[in-house]
Image (cartoon, rainbow, N blue to C red; front, side, top):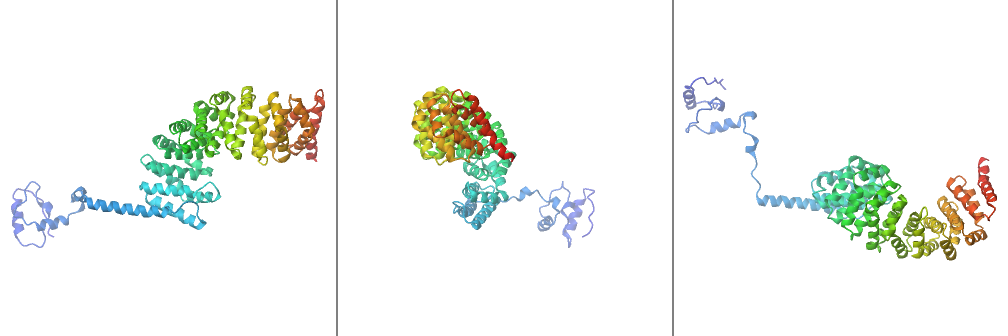
Length: 520
């Protein structure tokens, strides 16, 4: 191609015109035409078109001029139908998952879930179905733990949190099943619980609980996720309370008092936030937790799952501080506890938790509650529970603890317990569970409480060999300082009047004998 010269004068267009009419093997480049001169009508268009196609990329027109024409309504409808069909096919591949499968099928299902979630992160319908499948694959037993391990290794925890961040506020279904999957992945795996809180997932769950406050399904599953995050982690307890979990859960329960799932999961979250944390328990009680529990028992007292969580929550809050005991009496909690014992006589968890709650409400010694429980028939219910569940160490342990404080320095209750056969049941528990240190401690404590200040009980305990039983228990649990302390107090209470010094020496020698054996 011949070298072109720069345009220097107004005569140049004529030269261009002359050259244009001469035969040439190359078209004149487009850039040699002055920008100020119009293009002549008679100029052939084909060379210009060809040259434009050969222009360098930097001279081409902006890409916006090359936008595709909008798709027609028919094309959009066809694309939507194709997307829907693909989504439905993927969902159908997940729907057969109703629970844990065989090990090989579990692995295959988990791989399918992870692949679909990774490939369809913006498909809310598919995400919700995948999270539902995660929930049913991870029940709270050993097989579920294996699936939790596989899913966690494949990055499921991060995928769930990513989806909740991206779609949780906009899609109630994603929020519902995403929180359910989060609960399933965390409830029995401490590293997952810590990882979620470290990433800020608890803030996300609380945000979704508030955002979807009118949706009972989301509220129930978000509360369950908080329940799981608080399990056996004092560090998480502190973080969750600072983030406002207590206030949010109580508000959600108040908004849905008739929904049993919301109430149960809310009570579970509150109970674990206060478990072994007296400060949290006191905070929950003062912020309305006592009223929430009483309302739950009134409205859902026929449901065993709600009742279990309610009576356990009462026990935890009552243990926090005796300053809140008056709140329980004011809200009618004593009546609700005894009604629960009557409604579910065969449920060992409810029976033991009710006995534990009664004991916690009386400690250190609340004479008003002692009298109220006796007037409402609580002594009979505790003794009947121990007799019915004499093979349950937990019921016997909590029953002995309740009888101890119900009879402590209360001669009327002591006499009634003696008449109902309570002393026999306490000694029977001590004899039936000799290796259980907790049962032993509570039984010896009950002997101390029932024998102190009541001559008839003291005589009966002595007649059936109570002193020998205590000495045998003391010898077997000589390393337990709490049992040694309880045994010495009980033996002193059983000693005849005027022989306190001999009793002390006897109990001391009996407590020292095992130490000699141990030194040998």
